[in-house]
Image (cartoon, rainbow, N blue to C red; front, side, top):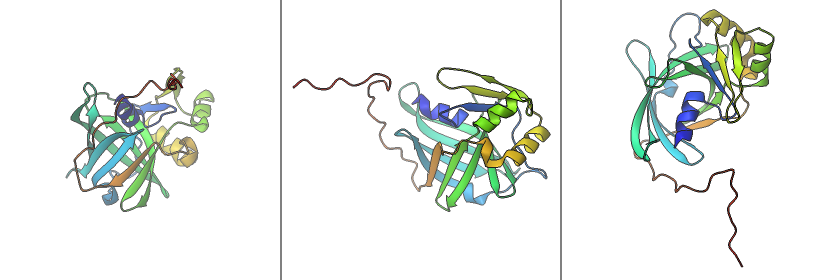
Length: 204
């Protein structure tokens, strides 16, 4: 079930983008009532349920129930969310309160009152911006998941993502959230063989 944790903290199966500061709009904290509520999602069959809420100070948080490792056993992890909006594009910075001081950057699209999609901030546009020093940071290659470590200020983040918009993000959604009324998780999937090891066909 570590894929759920990796997806929530990196929000990208092709790459991870982390920043010590969140991506924020000018003018303070945003309101997004369409995000508040109970949502179900999964990563390759691993189920999870997120309760998204906004506290009186305006901060958003997500309490995520899943079969976290070890176990798998049901547990809840807590995430801090910072929202941003430039023109019609909406963004989300997410931090695991127990795991890391760094934020993972994402773009989200609301399809309806009962469904929204999350896109990871990893793209050729972003990597090129690092190589050309248009955005402070570095790319750390890895055979499993390359990581972009940003060192930009809040103003630098706003300037870059406002200009790059959707081109700075993967074009395939990594997480799809659907509204639900239940906090009951379905049973965990039965473990199968590792994905890089082919299954052995039965003998005739």
